[in-house]
Length: 129
Image (tube, rainbow, N blue to C red; front, side, top):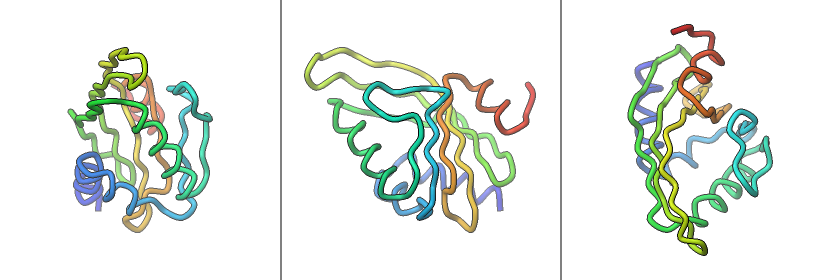
């Protein structure tokens, strides 16, 4: 099942519509470890996550998120991402690497967490480097 989860994450990072389609009705998006300006720290429910992520992504020009590493951790997948964009209003660039944890149940994302570092994401799923 976990190889399947890695493939789901790969598809979800490449296509926003596929990502949104995978969200469980009661998904939790947890941004406490990597707060994002103008977003709450936690979102509950599919519609809230879609609305908040859409709001975030449309604030950028040339937004790109590249998945660089996938780490299979059973029902969860740690993905290291490289995010690049330019602020629509300010033109301020963003070029950062950070990590996410996608947790699945029955091929649905039930928890999506963002972390400032790969190490923090791995620690969150109980993996020590």
